[in-house]
Length: 407
Picture 1 (cartoon, one colour):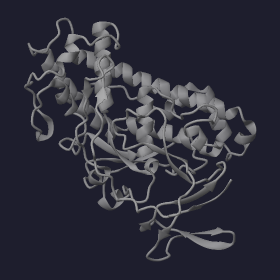
Picture 2 (picture 1 turned 90 degrees about the horizontal axis):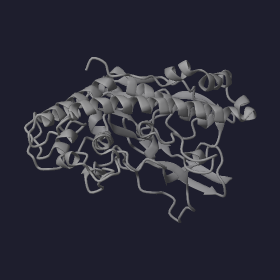
Picture 3 (picture 1 turned 120 degrees about the horizontal axis):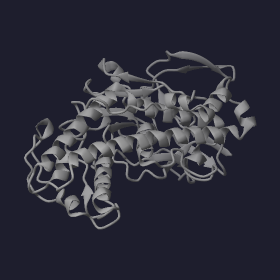
Picture 4 (picture 1 turned 30 degrees about the vertical axis):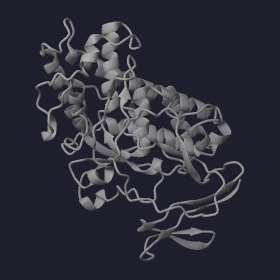
């Protein structure tokens, strides 16, 4: 590997934490002026290499997805080495509709919602911060991660700053209840009614898109919608409901991992270091940081603040479904839309947690197959990986399950 990775930062003064590099004093201080990375790379990759924008596998339907670019290998650098400065925040341009399996023309449309910068201005919206560095080059993170929550003061909430960050290091406006899940619920209902999610849509499913003008209390002072599927979408995080809160702020990588958990897709994409994130995570030191990010994602979702936001969306959705059950134009004899949603969420949540725990076990097994690399990890890491591989109770600690009880 031949190349350089240039990060340019400017300080108003040198005043920070002293370190030494090659007998030269250097300082760490939260940056005031951040410039984008300039990457010069040739030939193959190596630990600490500078990564550009490569789209990650298996996350194309994430409703919080702002692009989901994982740092990939840069192409040859053009004559102009310095790209334009990154904007302080990305405008919310909306998301693509999320289609049903039984009819791709029937889709759930996510409604407009605030950016992370806007959410951070309101102390009602929790900010979840894992004890893991966000950079891809981070190494040797303890797999059993911790997560903290920032609500106030506003000065601490200034941590949500998109300046100069690559996409996977940015913050995300997190729908605790995802728009994907509305689609997944309707697929689940379709399977119950028609026997398969892939068969032609059952008439009851299609009625969710009919302009039946349901009578329901629209949340957050929003105007009522013409169809039931739109009414369901109103109970997610939107510009009207986000600050109740029904949303949270988390790091983009954790946001992406949550999507993959519930979609039961490979959490660290790629096969044997050839494709996807495996090409980025090219050392055991980096890989254990991925295990920590998975654990942090589980703990974010299980946190009482996240569960309270989730509860608001679920109860709102089920209120709409209860109204549908009693609407002569909408109801389906022998079926309770509301009860089917309760069954759906229980199965959906349990399957996601079991999947994630099994993925943690698989990754621990994978790492332990290379004892020389394991021996290079800090003391205690080998034993912790063995616990992840062998101890189901410990995997429950890394990825706790928060069942819905009493509501």
